Amino acid sequence: MNILVAGGAGYIGSHTCVVLLEAGYNVIVADNLCNSKAVVIDMINKITGKKLLFYNVDVTDESSVDSIFSKHRVDGVMHFAGLKSVGESVEKPLDYYCNNIIATLVLIKSCIKYKDSNFVFSSSATVYGDNDVPFKETMQLRPTSNPYGETKVMSEKILTDIAKVNSDFSVSLLRYFNPVGAHESGLIGEEQTEFQIISCRT
Image (cartoon, rainbow, N blue to C red):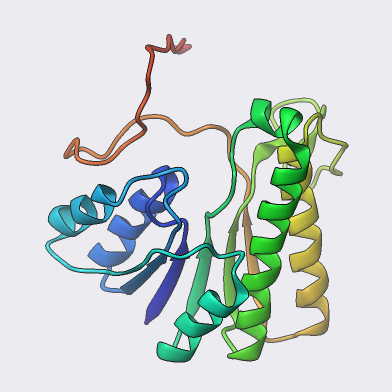
């Protein structure tokens, strides 16, 4: 099976690519490298001993995404692409709404056109708003506090609405908190420009 990983050179996307390759899937990455580096692709190949296909494209560009789907039979999409800074989203809301929503729409459009029925969306726990923790999937979503969170809510809504009228279109929504750490090889992981103190309860 061929899996298109949008944002596959990013932090979560790169680790996902490793797992997919090790599980025997063929991986196609589409990433414009705005939040990552091309060397990550080399590191993924080195870790797995396998080679993925890499397209340096912006998934908001409909023609570029369509070209990938036309060249390869895509059996599933995992969508990790998008601007990701909560603070920056408050300062530049238009950038976030344009980039994150359009990327989702473009990927969905190609999925419908080329009859790819499996779509995994990288959402966020921020969609739960000010609900009491621990969050439960059955909770009603509440307003988020920033444009980044709103783009996740909007993308989820778009995906669920599309799935309602396309019975073959399967959608999975991943809602998680901020991940931390690196691959055990040390070759891929979050790059930080300053130290962070992480408190763990035992």
